[in-house]
Amino acid sequence: MTELNYKKKDFASDQDVKWCPGCGDYSILSSLQMALTKTGTKKEDIVCVSGIGCSSRFPYYMNTYGYHTIHGRAPAVASGMKVANPNLSVWMITGDGDCLSIGGNHFIHALRRNIDINMLLFNNQIYGLTKGQFSPTSKQGQVTKSSPYGSLDRTFNPGKLAFGAGATYICKTLDSDPKHMTDMMVEADKHRGTSFIEVFQNCVIFNNNCHQEYTDRKTRSDHAVYLEHETPMKFGKEGNLGIVLEGLKLKVVEIGDKYKDQDLLVHDKHNKMLSYLLLSSHEENGFPKFYGVIYQEEDETFNDQVAAQIEQVRNKKGEGDFNKLLFSGEVWEVK
Image (cartoon, rainbow, N blue to C red; front, top):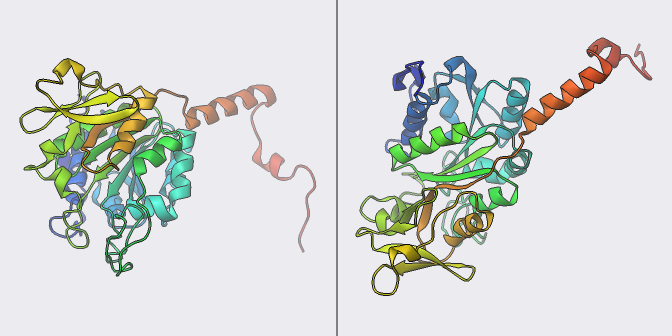
């Protein structure tokens, strides 16, 4: 617990929040404001960076430093901030269109570099701000304003993309469970490196109930597994369902005569192979979604590497001189 004694309202700005009534973004905003009361970071050391989209209005509503960048470029700006000032707690806010379409290249390279920032991906499977075009995470066949006969694109899996790019922290949560969301944000802040949090978020206007099966309180217990490290994967309203590993495949089983609690797969967030199976599994029909920290590994961060390299060169060559560097070598005078 922080000794700074911030309240949630301390992180709310004086701006009117202009999201549609009922939008999942409200819950995410509230959860981050709550999470920041628990991280122990001073307000002046926190910055929110966003691209373009409904989600990317986020910095306006946070009483922290903020930067609203151009479409898809938030990872680049967030990276520069962290390298220039390693003491900052940097939160990058993005949507599925901003992050995975125009910003896809920046996204994967920030992950592979393992820059010490936190990424929040709002995934509502649609372009909301521009009134309902299909996004990279829209379902194949989905009818939208830009796909009147159904989208032909195969659906992007953000978690698998992050895994393939070398992410050191991958987590999933949902806008309808603010407590879980807050806990995941606090955990992500502790991670040294890029923490990637995918939030399943509802767009009430252009893609309402897109995650209903997995997020509705009445049905989600039968369709969602809340992962905890070193804990068996058990779920269901009656707690009678579980996940087992058969060969290299995950399988949903009913706990009873054939399968006992001790047969269930135990989550290990450091197990790379298991994490890949969990990230891939929701593509199979009838499989539950997995929430929580799916994968985590410790590795050197890019910002630490940059600082170490600068120190190494300084020790070897002394303090730098920008003017001397600028006028070194072959130069021209333009008249």
